[in-house]
Image 1 (cartoon, helix red, strand yellow):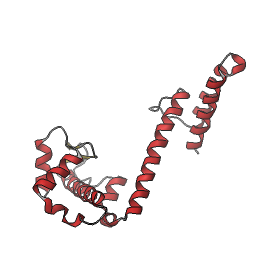
Image 2: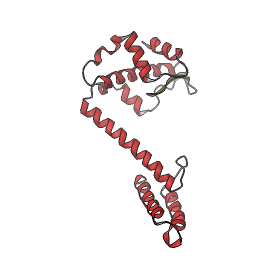
Image 3: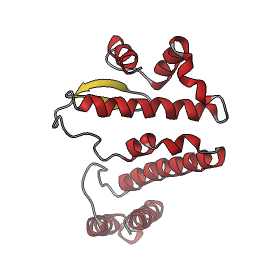
Image 4: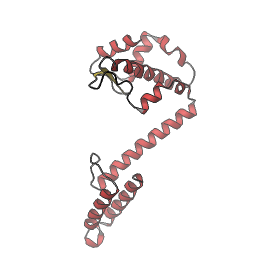
Length: 183
């Protein structure tokens, strides 16, 4: 199965998506998903594919290659790290290589998805709050930097200094939310 997957990835540069790879396997090697017939079927197919991809990746590292693994980008790349460094620390890798996660029930899957979306939305909100505070999301920041930036902008935007009450309120809210995430 390893060569089947690698050959497909090589034949479709620069990348393939999870959907393309799943479709290819379902058409050419449907027996691969025989154990996925029970509910929730889509999660089980996804899990089985990613389990295989991470296992292949562990083998490729020994050959100086690596798989870039995500739902929208599965590609073969050169591995510039040591050829003996198998399975670098990666929470997703650990999750997909743990066979017992294949048997999660629907409520556990729903809980995981809910947590995932909460984190995504919280990250989007954080980016918006940083924008209000005029802090780049790419720069390092801590509580002290956020406080300094808030004080600077509060001085400029305070209604008693000619600023807008609405802008000042947005600034205070952004400051409060960012400080909450930095606890």
